[in-house]
Length: 264
Image: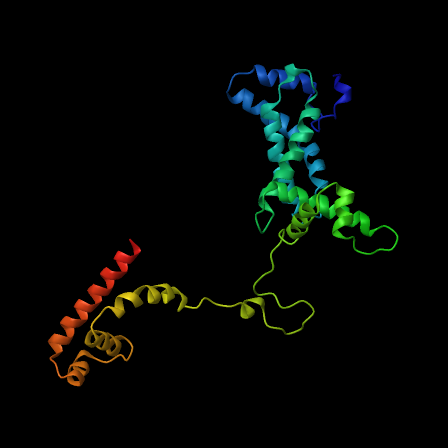
């Protein structure tokens, strides 16, 4: 490719053609001279990367971040480009930088992670809905109409519609839309019930408790459900406190063994 067909370098003092610069970069061994030429080449093509980044503006990312991502794509293009293949660097660099920007949006800007296929469905459904809504009548298109316009099945359209709400998340501190002074979302969410953690355990010990003698069941009830001390239990049953302590230990051990045997 002739030098005139490639964008002119921003450095006026650089008299080498882009092809010559990449051929020399490829031929140089690792070292300070190669590093300097690599940096110079990257800086020469950096305006092109920034122009590509502007195509992705107004999508929720700052231009500074987009330019940094584009610069990363440019560095990859410079390092991987092979001038011996006969293609112009721009032909290789543009899709490389564009792909890096698209990967950034795919992997780092979604609040809720969804598979790449679902992200693609979302984009196709979003564009189709926008185009169909601009037709005469101005009504929102149906699922079947979107499926017909995109060539997708209605199930895939529904997946894409669901993914439309996954790009950004609502803050728990946000107030209800259209309601002034309403309570934030966090105040309207349910909390975990601590009793649920022991529900399974309660059910698991019931068979073992039924197998205990009546006196031992009474002692367990008074101790753990009526919160009575061992001394008061002993007074009520007419036995010693030491005997109550021994029966409690034995009963708990038998219940534990019964539950473990049942689980096995």
